[in-house]
Image (cartoon, rainbow, N blue to C red):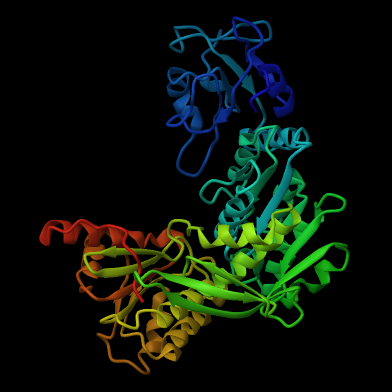
Length: 496
């Protein structure tokens, strides 16, 4: 948004003036929805959410240097401020004069502005990354590969919803050579709404799994929703999709340019070998082979991350990155926070995969735990509820328990949440209570209780849905060792 003026914002947002800037048209240098990070000269858009309303922070935005306020609650502006011919709200209302635009809905206005701005990015290759699992890791890997030779912008954190996607687009520069947007969904129609704004040249679907079944119902429903990203591919665009999801087949019939990846024999980029390897200094990486020809190293754990790397490889090839550069960049990549992130705290090795969970990703994490820790004292899985699964929740949690039992080498399971009763029900048929334990919730006290179970030499997995906030166990562990052992938690080389 660096070249936009206040009036261009008004037109793009479909708004009207409440108050114009006293100095007339202003060149803006960006847009923010958070007064904690706003910079002088930016526009502030007051979003309303479940817990916060940006309209409550208008004065904070002005004090931080906002040059323009975009609102949909004009009643928050006192009578007499602005109007069709008015100028900026003065010191009686805010600390200084400021321009104000009224729109019907600030959320919709944000999408409108992003859609208009997207059409100005004529020299930018736009990539959309969707799928049930692996979106953030794949986005980071694509960014890592492309950044070796090109200049661009990628989604920060997991900015994949109706707020994060437009903010990502608006953060791009007109001189960027690529833009990567992560795209998520909670309900039918959300991906289509976002893809229409993104208009990708390359669309990635990493996987199809049991996500948000309360709204999407079945795997076919998930595939239908994720495939909406393909509907808005620009002419000549490329679809990079998993070959391991037969539910996608019917949605690919009208897509002329498709590259598939996966374990399937039919995949264009086929994962023909993958293993964890340990270096001389104890660091664990993935070594995988593509089509029985190309071998790559990725400094991450979890065999499914090799599939994410294949998707990134396909995108990098599309944008002209050479095979040698791709291999070197993969070998230097890093995992996003709380995605199989390994942390060593005083000899207790923690695999922090607590950002989110569904059945497929949880089973993959359990298998990763089982494949590592040959020298560990114990393997312990801390498993939180998998949410938004609807009627499928009981069987899904039992399935995770079965994966634990099938692994054969997991020594203890800590189950957190009410849905975990189904996990416990299945474990109880084979294990005595004590090998598995139940925590109905995870407040600060219970997090400390869980952290107290761990001993030096243990390898611990944290995995659960975002609302479970299992990272609190990690915080409690840091507090415990920091106060009782005098040992501060540090990230250290992973051990086998």
